[in-house]
Length: 460
Image 1 (cartoon, rainbow, N blue to C red):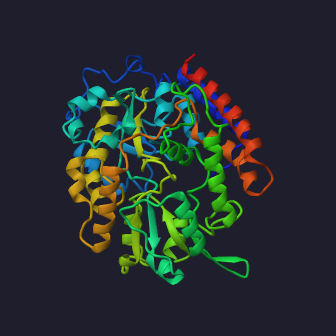
Image 2 (image 1 turned 45 degrees about the vertical axis):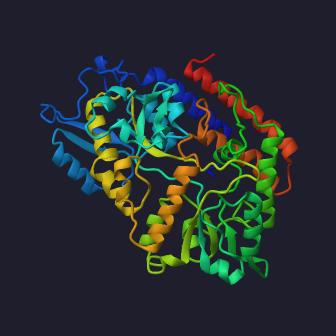
Image 3 (image 1 turned 180 degrees about the vertical axis):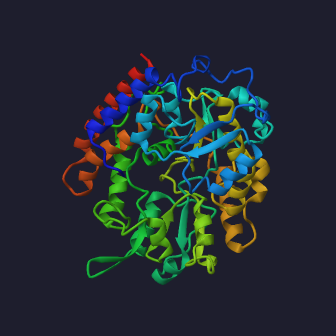
């Protein structure tokens, strides 16, 4: 997790507050665009004959939008140029406050969309969707609703995954004498703790093979997933109150700390040597917790692509006694800035990228699951590995409630919350604090952030 100071958090919240009044000028000044709410009667995705050539700016990174793709788009739509704008969160917030933010902004639908909508920064796309030739609501998988807020569309995922699924290295299981789990039955966290301890190999005090990566650690998304599996939530129904200082959250934290203390997962007291996806590929990690998109890496990496039968996908784990739930915890996609001076052209680009040829290419590669039912047949199903992972994917879609959106508070900034977790929860792993002391303070400080977010959004 990225460490954030409280002062930086405060500055980000301040910048977002300024944005509501300061970014009305969009990328310049155009008063008749300032009140655009997505109900523009001239919305069109087929008018390529506009006299003016406009530039659409986007925060999509080069790894997701290549120069060749940009050339392909600009050839098809000669009146629209596309410019990539590198921007981390701090830079993006500053650009929004200055009225110079990009038109198409890459965000996490689960963790960030509600905040962008409640702060008046995301364009309502309902009428654009209704007129789109490529985006048909009856062709969208229910999980696409991650980019809906209170019944309206504000963006689309570029692709998706049930993000808590597991990948195992069967060779490590066999060497440790651990039976290969049934891919049709989710492991409970108790079973997972037992298995990871048996898989972890330590020599002379050094971890040679780690049982599992660190995605079992305490985070808002992971805690909320486990709570939803038992019918509980971190938030009140109206999202105005944090429910953190209670036995349910304490049980989640204690369960996670069991993994940490056993050193059967990477953690602050037992850090990963590098990115855990690479550690898994190098044969130093028995279980990796990633979404379906990780199949694309295993298919393409020189160390794994020639022996894919050594790997296997498993459904997301479930709390003992809980209900199976395998959600999208990120949902990477994009929105259009509400203050954009060129919303029609921005939607033309968004539509092409999310629903056109780039979406077909992503589906064929296995780098994520398409959000369109009609594109599911493009997902790789040739090899035994393809068929096994696709079977688990379909089982998660059918039985894992992937269409139920993970609850994330719309008044919170995800980075701010992660900063507080770093500050208040990490000491527990080192034995320097206790859940009884840390959870009340975490609830208090997150509640303060919720109230700040409500003030910014004008909610009483």
